[in-house]
Length: 226
Image (tube, rainbow, N blue to C red; front, side, top):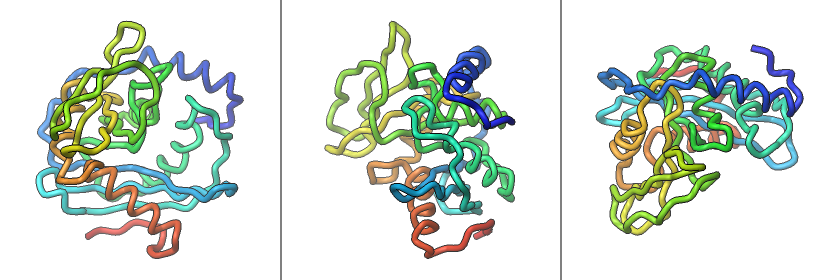
C-alpha cells in the first residue's frame, strides 16, 4: 500500500475506504485475541510498534511481534492511522500466529470519518478488529453508571458509533467501537470479556506494556513465542 500521501490525499482515501467497512458479526469462535499498540518519545520520529497474541479465555500470551521503525507521516488529528499503521502492519506480517480478533489501542468507527486505526487496519489486512481507546474522540454520550459493565452509546450525527464502557468499578471508562468484520454488540462483549480487574482490557494493556518495554530497551525487537 502507498503510504506516501499528503494530508488531503489521506482524507480522500478515508472517504473511499469508509464505503467498504463491514460490521457484520464475527462468526467465531474466538480462541485467540491480540492487542496492538505503539510507543514513541516526544520530539523523536522513532516508533516502537508491537502486537501480542493471547489465549482468549486465560489471557495468557502465545506470541508477540515487535518492531522499531521511523514515522513517515506528520501528527494530524483524525489521520493518526497513517502515522501508526505502516509499522504495525510490518509487525503483523512477522507475527507467527494470527489471532481471531485484533484489539487496537485506538478507535474503530468512532471517528470523524469512521476510519480510526482499528477500522483502517482491518480494511487493509482483512483482519477482524475492534478499537479500545483511553480517551474520547467524537460524538456525544451519557456517562455510564459507576459499576463494571455499565455502558452508554456514542452517537454522532444520529448514528451509533460505539460505546463508553466502565471496565472497572469507579474508574474512568474506555471507548469501544467495532473496527471491521465485528458487530457493534460484539465489540462491547469482547472488551468486557477481556477486562480482568483493571481499567484497560488485557490485550491492549499487555500491548501497551510491551511496546514501552521495547522503547526502554528492556526487550529486543523481533518475534517471540511463549
